[in-house]
Amino acid sequence: MADKIKTVMADKIKTVVVLVQENRSFDHMLGWMKSLNPEIDGVTGAEVNYSVAGDATSTPVHFGNASQYVDPDPGHSFMAIYEQIYGDPFTWGSTSPATKPGVTVPPMSGFAQQAETEKPGTPHAVMNGFRPDAVPVYRELVREFAVCDRWFASVPTSTQPNRMFVHSATSHGLVGNDKKLLREGMPQRTIFDALHDAGHSFGIYYQFPPAVLLYRNMRQLKYIGKFHEYELHFKRHCREGKLPNYVVIEQRYLDWKLLPGNDDHPSHDVAHGQRLVKEVYEALRSSPQWNEILFVIIYDEHGGFFDHVPTPIEGVPSPDGIVSAAPINFTFDRLGVRVPAMFISPWIEPGTVIHRPSGPEPTSQYEHSSIPATVKKIFNLKEFLTKRDAWAGTFENVLTRATPRTDCPETLPEPVRLREAEAEEDQHREVSEFQAELVQLGAALNGDHATEAYESDELVKGMTVAEASEYCRSAFTRFREECQRCHDGGMDESHVPELQPPMATATVVSSASKLCGCLPCFSA
Image (cartoon, rainbow, N blue to C red; front, side, top):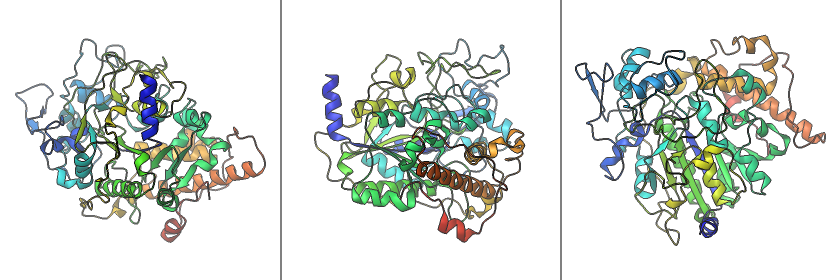
């Protein structure tokens, strides 16, 4: 029976497209979609946190539908999330284990309290969501295809560890930033390696130096031709029917006036993320490959925004037995907060809602490791990456039709601009934690990781978004050039180029140069 299911899936789907957006919870982005489809486990407005978590005599903060442009960025560190879901502040040491003993169903009661503690005046920002008409691209996708209302972040912490799970089903023990691992590259095997070894193709279509280079294996020369500049190649490959088996879209993680951030990370306007989704969908819809495509949209983590569904704790396996560094000592035995997940394909009935998976284990859930687990099934790969993707639910059950639909919309609605000011304001902000990690990745690629500035954090300290954007682009360009030099010189395909620090790090170029040069791509 299992072999028959694999054959049916392989007949239907030959290309999986993945877009991972940033830092929004399910209730915040899609909770009010319940008004369109009551089957969705969304919100009604009755949801509440109190200014003192769990104390009904303190000021109530009800969940609303007034989200538009959200600034500032709410707390989403491991410690912040602990307080958000349990209602108690995290205290260091053995008196406060990383998973609270005796609590099998977290009350999700500390979002307002934690927001006020971290950034006074922000509880209402985290206790609000978007009306369907404010995110019209998602409104139509929810109506026309499938939404999953039981998809969780893989780990209750910030961006990078969760993004690691998407393609490798582990963060290799990370719950935060680790400059040494960033410098060396994350060592685990990825779904890219599994696909390549089995003779399948993949491609990274990037608008910004791609974060998948955080995996060391992805820096190997044999993968040079897998990286494609989005603006130059994505629509053309769609039009010509040349998309590979596994496609990853890497969006713009930094904001500037002419090319605003479109990853949905606060303080970026989600209208730009909506436009990216619209553009990707319409390119896929017009492709001769459309009837063989499954497009998956998820968010890496909840970004500090409220969600009412308790995070799963029971039966969650550690991917690889690695425990995070002290003093947190997290054993990866619980998931993060629920995040948006949507599936788009002509094999999906309109208005489909996917809840909890039926297996493979009684405690299995949908989480980021469900992507490599499902890709393994579709392409009949030999082995799981870790114990986590072996446990995670797979979503082939969303492909219920015997024949592909012919009535899928060819276009999606125009996004609604929610931000009054231009993105130029953000160019002068200091970088966020994730943006700082991208700068550190750039330093690992161009050789600056060997400098004292990298080790002392002086490289990132005080760096603005505009400076970070140009630094990352310059670093990636230098790394690409070294890859090409090594390739032309006949180096082994498993070689990982390691550069020496440049004589001087250029941080300023003209806007015209940025716009015209943008990012040279690995492949022609």
